[in-house]
Length: 218
Image (cartoon, rainbow, N blue to C red; front, top):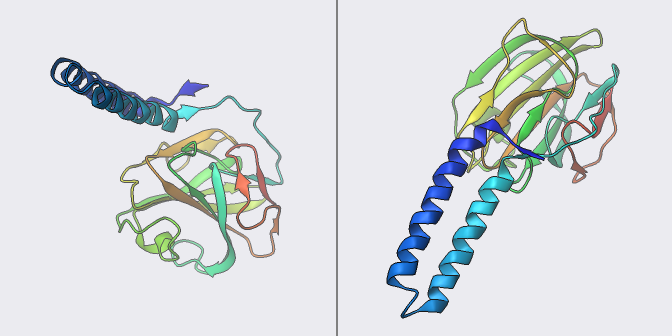
């Protein structure tokens, strides 16, 4: 396991806060209220470990296949339904949505190999990520990857806590399936828009892993 580069600054800041709080606690509280000093240490250590864990990147055996749509994020499948896409396709698509809790790995991976033909950031609200309108009203970043099997739209969506979406791709870039394409900080959601009739390999509420789980077959 490694730590994602997007986490270095957050981890350093949290570590400094941890050190300052516990130094002050040691000098001013530990003598008269040792139990309180220990409580502060445990709580702040838990926060530090949580922040480190949030930016973890586990070692995995990644899944690949020309006709496979690989899950772009860790989390739970919260939507499998047909929707009308107003943004790019302008027709009906099959939407699969994965909700990422703060405890999940938040690295995002390419579901297919191909060429990036669309890349657009949208400002928006910060509704909870499982809200039905979060796909169209929240802050989000959409990309479309074109392969020999067709085009897939992948949408990074900010949640109530997530305030920063990172996307590394550019239009015209060639991408490899299951390779990293972005990161979302502190709770979020990823939507995929697939051709109607695509065979779905997962079920609602199924726990999935980015770069590993096969969401669908083209």
